[in-house]
Length: 252
Ligand SMILES: Nc1ncnc2c1ncn2[C@@H]1O[C@H](COP(=O)(O)OP(=O)(O)O)[C@@H](O)[C@H]1O
Ligand SMILES: [Mg+2]
Image 1 (spheres, rainbow, N blue to C red):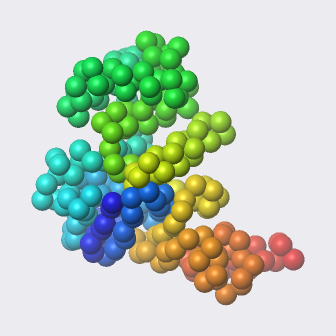
Image 2 (image 1 turned 45 degrees about the horizontal axis):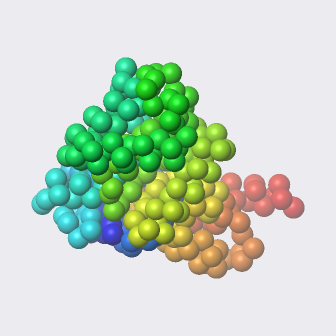
């Protein structure tokens, strides 16, 4: 479970995240949708204890990330937007390194790793240097690393960017399987179609403010134009009136 309480971050005059209050339940895939610069990565950095909020806090499985960061972080599997992977390690070495960081015992890590290599079809690449991996394989090893310590909360920052359709489908199916096993999934995206395809519930953030929240169905019903697609809805909610008119005009 994830809960934010008046989560706020200023960078000088820029109010990157403004009094954010959201709750994501176990078993749920929550899409945090917004254009570039909306405040998604800043929110994720605060949720995961990488950035101190100006105000407010976040609870991970009820544990306050500011008061008990080590315990809270042990519940989180994070897939950042630009993951730090060590290209001069093999996939297996990298996973052992991460397992040590999270205090996963060697024999448990070894079994879990074999399971993950198989799941991601990386068995043949496990003992090759990560620098030889394709973008999709790198993304897969990063996801595998985030799953090693069996976290109950998965937080992903734009996880499907740059993935080929097959890897993107794999990520989608994997997140669904994890949610079905009771994990809490929070993912950011700026792509409406991805939110629509992958998420049970969506929060739309613009200029640091949560401007709408609900299932895609509920958000559609909120739109004045009941036939609005998600893109038109988004533009309506984010005040992109000019663009909306243009889309309408092109559609007529
Ligand atoms: N470290 C930082 N210092 C100053 N401004 C920042 C910093 N990180 C993000 N910002 C600003 O905060 C806003 C939100 O950024 P970000 O959270 O990265 O958005 P998103 O991930 O939704 O694209 C933007 O205006 C960005 O320029
Ligand atoms: Mg971002």
